[in-house]
Amino acid sequence: MAADPHKYDAWNTLALNLAFVFWAVGLLVVLGYIIKLSSVSGSKDKYDFINRNEIKYLWIATIILIIGACFFVNANVVELTTLWVFVRTFTTAMMGILVALIIQNLLKFYYPFFIEKRLKVLRYKPRISPKSGRPMKLLSEDEEDSHLDEGMIAEENVFSVDYDVWMDEETGYKQIEKYSGHLHAIQCPECNYQTFKVMREEIIKAPSYTEEGELMKHYQCSYCGYKARKTVALKQQVKLEEAAGSSAATA
Ligand SMILES: [Zn+2]
Image (cartoon, rainbow, N blue to C red; front, top):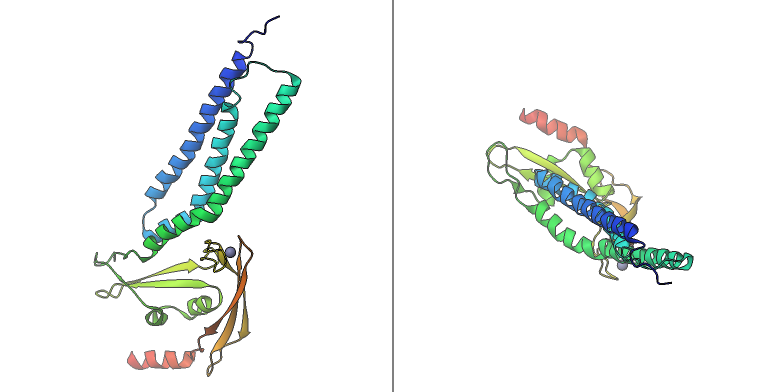
């Protein structure tokens, strides 16, 4: 008895349609992300949005696209026995997982280089002052301290946080932006991936009014596991009375 080649047409059509639906949804996720990103105004907000969401959205889209592909490769069934169902399901799942793992690794270890470049551009793109409409100046580490409050300076010392201070020299308007070192990986000196992050920090010596302190930063690479420690000087504490006294004197 010859097998009917159209026996599984209903399934094949369904599988093909499901594939298209999944692909459409996957592309919509990417498109939705792009639209959302373009609706975020301000370089700092864009920076945070990319940092928080881009890889996550691409990963979700990847999974949906792969599920679509799994249906697509099973939309040509002409013969089906229990064994075939088992073999097909198994190989499809395995291939799907394999492709997902490859893309996950690409997103984790190669994609950050691409993101990093764009984040850098966003971080150092001159901010426009809402007061004068002119580009503001990014203050240097030394210049910025007088514009940060004590808590911010302490945080910058201890928690791998960076504050950028943008100054409108004409009107004195300033904009302070916070960048967290914990969310942001740097290049690993061992494997060169963008996967080297501060895991924890400890104060070796607290700063006093007369001496600088010392802070130990523990770095670890999430790719190769390379660990490193770096000591950083903690700035001397500033006497509050002095600061208050000088401002009272000028007032
Ligand atoms: Zn590494």
